[in-house]
View 1 (tube, one colour):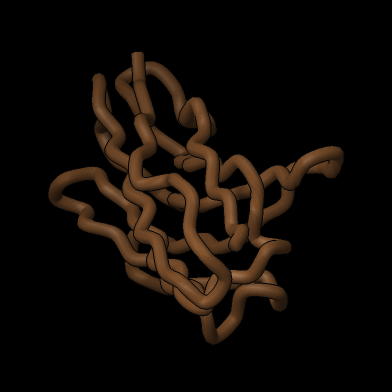
View 2 (cartoon, rainbow, N blue to C red):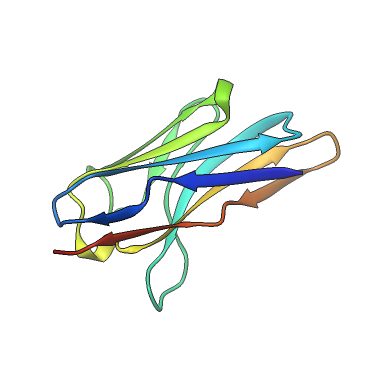
Length: 119
């Protein structure tokens, strides 16, 4: 079994910063992609950023230049540094990882952490 646990969400004023963390644990052999998604109120879940095990990254156009994804492979952790936050960044943020265990390779999701950008 694999678990992903996010932390670091909260309330921040426009222009502020937050850093999200996600830790994967369990019977992990390796992790390929790690990613952050978000689901704004009343909208569908969308990809924010993703990172390969080799460190290659992709970002949604709406967050380029403001958000930075990084990971610590040895600790099975992924981070999302969010700067210059805007009200439209308000959403539940989810961590996701494609994990290989002894029996299968599959995507796993965290429970989500709320980020609210408001004055």
